Length: 122
Image 1: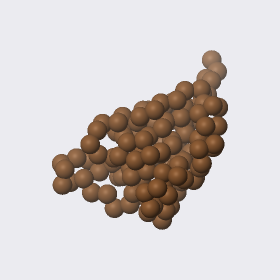
Image 2: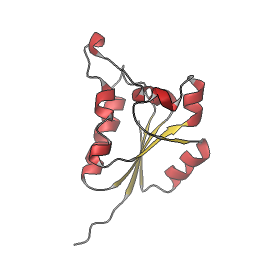
Image 3: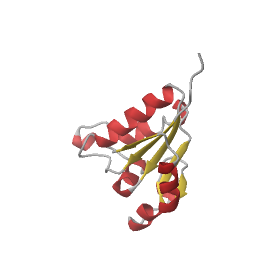
């Protein structure tokens, strides 16, 4: 039996704390990668805050999401994208991020979505 590889794109647009959306998106992306599917992980809007260095969620008695983000490569998720406009609007640069990412514009994001078999928008 031949396994068909599909492309899954996960759009993460929420700040790292205050809702369960970032954790749900991360869990779904990791589970997808375990089954050797192609994963695009795209951070847009406030989602870029999930990738900030030196996060510490102890003060709100929560797990620090940034620690989990560092496991993406271990799961084979190497296609991590950040919306250029989202970074710029928040006064951030790639130096502020804890992972190497590809900076993309809205046209690139639209193309990723168009060429994906499945899109999850969290």
